[in-house]
Length: 79
Image (tube, rainbow, N blue to C red; front, side, top):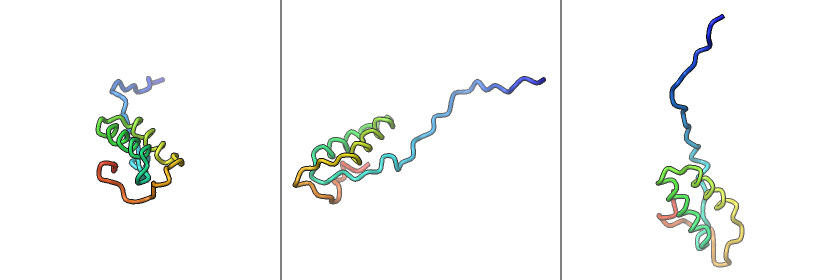
């Protein structure tokens, strides 16, 4: 019987799909703005899980202020 092939190389870490970070913060909502900045900072630092969590919270955030309206984002809030 032959020995199975064993590889001693480093494991491969696959990137998350970009759509996981895709979300549109509600214009005028402070919570969405803060989460968008957290997502962008995490992406810039290579922390994909933190970026995913922030994007997920933006998508799930439903309690926007009355002044908040879906609109275009400022450039600092875009990934």
